[in-house]
Length: 144
Image (cartoon, rainbow, N blue to C red; front, side, top):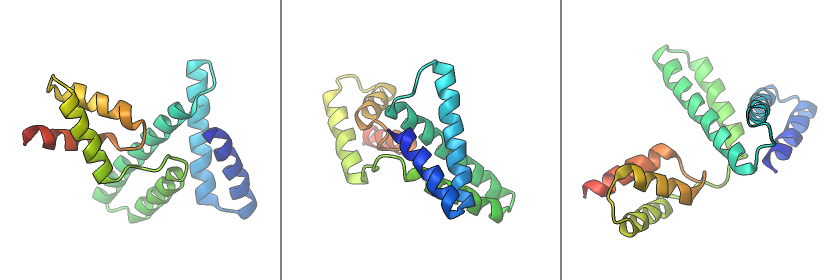
């Protein structure tokens, strides 16, 4: 389970004195525990992956804001946290693999509704691709 891997990584970071890694991992574990409290059950790996992707998205948005505010120290801090979190995510699809999945889904779908196609693609990739990348690729393919 991903949660157990994160717990082990926290212990290793504590022993090695890696403060940045420890900060990011502790935050992720706390979010997992909040999610478990909300659902009143232990989260499965797919839910944990989804939660970690949301955390990465939040950090990317924070990076944009910090860049606008000219806070480069905070930008590097957030980027380091993203790198730590990404270690626990499944291997991301290459752009070629994602394009093939999108093309196959569009050809399979009779209805050319962009929302339905994006939903179908996201169900197929299950955390192995960024939602914004899927959205822009579907939008691009439907315009051709």
